[in-house]
Structures are given as structure tokens and as C-alpha cells.
Length: 115
Image (cartoon, helix red, strand yellow):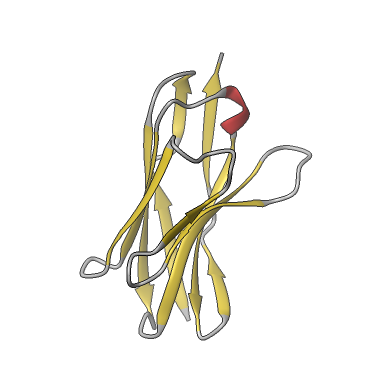
């Protein structure tokens, strides 16, 4: 089992920044890709950003140039730096980790961007 605990969500004005963190614990060997997804009210969950153990990253078009994903393998932590936030970024953000093809999810952290 892999446990993930997110932190760093909150309320911010449009144009502001937030940094999300996700700490892994448990059977974390063989965890490769980690990332963040989000789900806004009434919408499907969407992948926001992902990063491999080697550091290759990918982003949704809606956040490219504004969000940056990073990971610290020594600390078993993945981060999401979110800049130039927009009201449409408001959602619950979920961290995930892929271990041997099985995804594990955190419980989510709320991000609210006011206009």
C-alpha cells in the first residue's frame, strides 16, 4: 500500500500563487510516475501534471506556463507550484502515485481562486 497526504491548498485571489505538497509513505519502492489531478464541481476529474522518477514532466494545456511540478525522491514528496491562478483553477486537487501500474490517490486538498 501507498499512502499520500496532500497539503498547501487554500483560498487565493486571481493572479496569486499556491504551492501544493504531497508526501508518500508505505510501500513506495517501484513508484514511478507521480502527479496531480483536479476535480471542479460538476466536472470530471482531469489530469493537471505528471512527473516520472527521472524528472520528465507533462502538463495539461490549461496550466502550461503557469504550473510547475517537481519531486524530491529523497523526501518522497511531489510538489505543484501554481502561479497566475485563475478562478477556473478552483477545484479539489488530488495527488497520485503509480506503482507497478496501480494508481494510489490522496484524499485531496481544496484550492479556491477568487476573482
